Image (cartoon, rainbow, N blue to C red; front, side, top):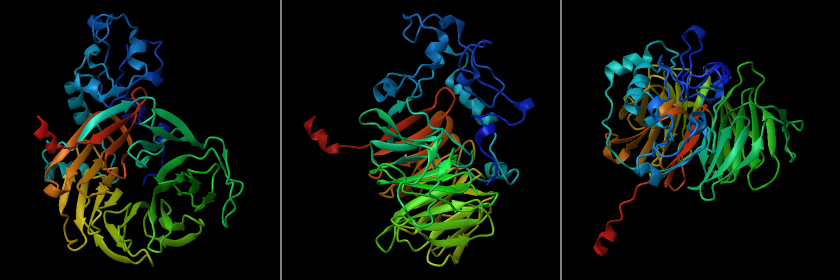
Length: 467
């Protein structure tokens, strides 16, 4: 992965000052603070429609434009059904429609590529699956929650441990959101000094200060956070303090790219850390001792272990993906077809199917019994596939682009049916609850940062008998 972070990376903002382009959802006023702007790739400057400037959506309340556009307002499913934008963006007060702005985004969003024109080649060769599926319903959007991203290529910063409990990164803090109580609380703040309160071999008792968290994993009551300099911090969520701190490497290129917590074959709990130093490390979650260290010829961007714990999918700064034996790190097989570097992988619960996400704007689905070609090639709208999740029942594959779109594919329809969730903002991560009842999407944006919640759609046909 690219050795750079989000300091110069803003929502839909180019690095070159001469090419910097801005879209504000507030008046073009010199007194407006730039931190309250919604930014875009396009040349267009969106202004408040003067005709509507003195009234709210109902036309009967005097509201200051700036206050109305930037105040924190949630959106419920009932409000969305009545026509309110799910993100609370007041399109009726702007000089552009949602439809026209979407077209502009599709035309001008620039996908990041390590291999030049990989996305353009896919656009020519691959057709999109027709949308029209409807598997999850919008339930709630909360703007109290402010997800953030450290590195623009790493988007696994949202984790749901139940249909009501979500953990996420917000600046330097790991936060917990309860959709049941509407309570947002801080779990751990990395801006200050963080040191372990337990003693384990290999733990850095002095801890860390101002750790920049690049990736996160949460499962049950266990949390692991990975840092930009190879830091690992482990915490038991049901206990105060931090259990373990270590620095995996002192390599100059030491970004922790991905983490996964999983049940081991021996009955314990392990976690894997994928690192930009070309290493994959496996730790015991009880003793926090390193069990294995596998090395590869290129930076490891993401790894995931199969449900039977017999294979690890490994993707990174290479066109090919690997299947590796978790006992010895030996490469069992490889997959070929992507045109750029990959940053996501996931296993279907049947243990035979896995998926890889790539900067060539595709997710490819593979069967370990027939690896010569993918089962399906699923093309996105805007850019790289940054995050993948299979539902625990195996019925759905959730595919997240870097911004604006999350796709839900029906695996039982051979990935030929999909639901498209459409919004505006960089995606910090996606997560399905363990029971598949809720899907959470983190949106990073200066003004409209929020957490979207979609709930599983059910058909209760037995109730028809009462009608």
